[in-house]
Image (cartoon, rainbow over all chains, first blue to last red):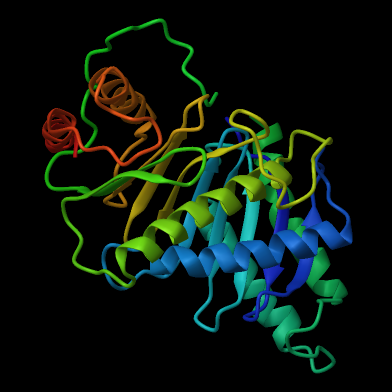
Length: 142
Length: 169
């Protein structure tokens, strides 16, 4: 059963990358590339809303490719959380919602954090790693 | 894999995964971005005029392919973002889903792109797209009056396609 998460991105409402973590993929990107990819995703997400045949579209939630799946969660404020994982990985939506909760608790409530800036909160990193590892443990413990 | 591994020459239609009026639109582009076919069966909302809509769709697909090739977590050797990808080169996406629609995509080795926009709860339509490509080969490519690279004006193709879409979605 596939349960591996390759990487996680968080982008602010203007499309700038504020957090990128790679969990061990061969395609690890350097800073510049991750910034470009994040901006591109932000634009594609917006364009997909334009092409909807029905009104009320809020953008791409799941992208399925040959070798990976990309799940995206957009908060009400426009901050996007997306995760690159193995095809067929379950429960990514709930993981992303949980990561959003961690973000509100450890980043937004941190008085030293500047809005829309890259995230440098140690507690957020620690809790995030725990949340992602929980999935991995479930995968390894099968 | 993107390309067909099967040896079927004239496949029978795959088992329908959804029933009802789920099919919204279909687009077909060639490798130069010319829109060969656009048919809509159910489209309550149109935000742009037809030309802009086609260009936007083609642009979205081009960029998404570039993005997936770059983001591929299983390969370390990747070109730069924005470099045009040859059909079959790099990891390509086959579908994406939003809360209001699902877009299924297939690119043939010759660069013919087929896009189906359906209801969000539609299943995997890769086999249906292959079948539509075979319809294209039979009714359009083999038509001696059809010029490659021009919009498709084959009535038989349109009716067969409509019939097939009514059957699967």
